[in-house]
Length: 175
Image (cartoon, rainbow, N blue to C red):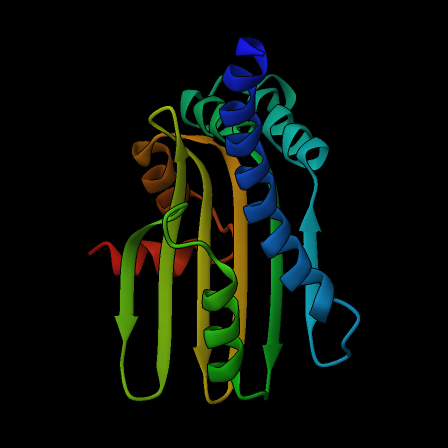
């Protein structure tokens, strides 16, 4: 009986994390077959291949490329859902309502009359496990989820040295 009492809280924590991930997956799934949206998924294997290419770029010993390759292998996957020529404000609100605010910490919130941009992170053990960007305006909507095992310095380097979608907004917002 004592074992069950000790295991139950752990099960509830793991279930809660899985349910949060499911909320994002459900949001993607809800709109991924909608013709108004474009969907991109970059698998962990593709990120490993990209990082490996940079690390071993035809015998190139460029340390910066090798370091960037190592950093890219920390990315476990990227999911992007985007739509142009659509009122993204209601979608922004819907996406935000699916998230459990206690699982994500807000990094940036950029609001003006015509658009909203929010960056959030999910941390575990002092490491960033997910960077989430949600944008909505009268003309478009974007949701980006980048999974991995990062430090904040890693995220800054990714924003500065790569063309990963959404990182340009991250870089601009941090200045």
